[in-house]
Image 1 (cartoon, rainbow, N blue to C red):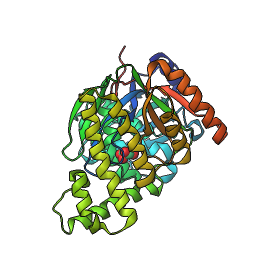
Image 2 (image 1 turned 45 degrees about the horizontal axis):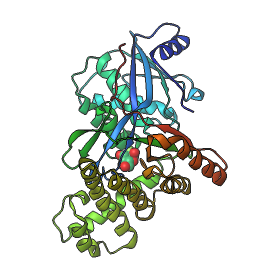
Image 3 (image 1 turned 30 degrees about the horizontal axis):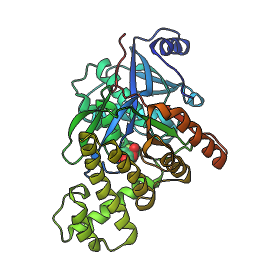
Image 4 (image 1 turned 135 degrees about the vertical axis):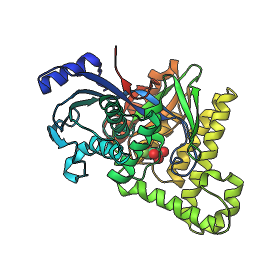
Length: 393
Ligand code: GAF
C-alpha cells in the first residue's frame, strides 16, 4: 500500500516532531525507467521518468550550525544530529549519510554553509523497491540547500553532486540515470538521455490506451551490495580488452555487429555476456525510442520484454520473484511488454498494460505471485511527475 501524503500532512508531522511549523516544504520524486538498464555507466542511452511517488522534506533554518534530521520512514534511527562544519562520512550515521554527503559534495565545489537546519523527511516510495529512494533523498537535500543557502548552482549541478555522493561518499559506483531522472523530471515526459554526451530530449509518454504498471516484488534489493559494483567493473574489463585492438570510447559506442566482431578479444564467457547486455541494451533503447516515434507500440513492448531476458541471462541481475512477475505479465492479454527496472536483485518490474485490463492483469499476476512466493506483490499505476521542487501551493 502506498501512503497518501501532501504538504499539509508533512507540515503537521514536522510540527509534532520539532514543536513549531516548518518554514518550507519540498518534494523529490522517485523514478522509473522505460528501457536502458545498466547502460548509464557504459556510455549508453536511458529512457527514465520521474514519478509521483517520492520523498517529502519539511525544513526550517536554524541560527546555530547544527543540522537535525528525522525520517518518518526510519523512525528507529531516531533524531540524527551533525554540525554543518563536520561532514565526514561515518558508517554508524546510517541514512543520515545521504543528506550529509550531499552537503559534503556541495562544499567540495567551494560552497559554504553558515547555519544549520531542522529537516523532517517522509517518503512514500516503497522500501527497497528500486524506485531510487536514495537519489530522491540526495536531490531533496540538494534543492533544499540551494534554496536555504541561496546557492548559485543549477539543477544539473545538483544531479552531478548526487552521483558523487553515491560514488565517492557512499561507495556505490552508480551511473547518472537516477539523479538525472529525479532532478530533471517533467510531468508526463520521459527523458531520452545519451550518457556518453549527456545530451537529452524530453519525450511525451504517449502509450495510447496503455499505462505503465509498477509491480513491486517486495523483495528488498540491496544495491550497495558488491554485485552492482562487480557488474560495472566486469564491463570496464571487457571494454579494456576490446580497446586493445579497437578504437572505442565506451560499450555504448558499439553497434551489435561491431560487438560481434570484437567479442573474441574479451575471451571470457561471463565478461562477454555482461558486455553484450550493455551493447545490445543500448541499441534496444534507441530502437524503443524509434518504435515510439513510429507509433509501433507492439514493437516497443517486445523490446521491453527483450530487455528483461538480457538482464536475466546475460547480465544476471534478476531474481526468481522478478522473473515470475515479468513472465506472468507476458502471458496476459493486454500486456505489451514487461521487465525489471533499476539495478535488479529485487525491487520492481514494470509492465505496459492496456488501461482497461489493468485490474485483471493485477489479479492474475498477484495470485500467481502470492501462490509461488508466499508473500504479496504490490501494484501501482505510474504517474509521470515533475522533478525535485519546492511545494509552494
Ligand atoms: C541503479 C543505478 F543507480 C543507476 O545508475 C543505473 O545503473 C541502474 O541501477 C541500472 O540501470 O538504479
